[in-house]
Amino acid sequence: MARFMDVHDGFVGVTRDQLAEAHDADLAIEGEEGVHFEQAWLDPESGKVFCLSTGPSKEAVMRVHERAGHPTEQVYAVDIVV
Image (cartoon, helix red, strand yellow):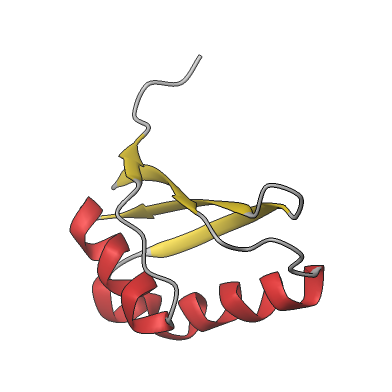
């Protein structure tokens, strides 16, 4: 499985609970695409959310986020780790 980091914009002022709701929406349907969202981070000041996942492809990650209501095209393969 490949590992991906994605970035969402537009989450200015979002709370921890709201981030958890968005993450739970991904978790509820991730298996249908063979994706697993491991963790999400939020910078409420900039409105950026970062999600770490594993899955078969960038497109599968994008489909889950789209269906969960927070689409992004900023999905990056992060295969090299040091």
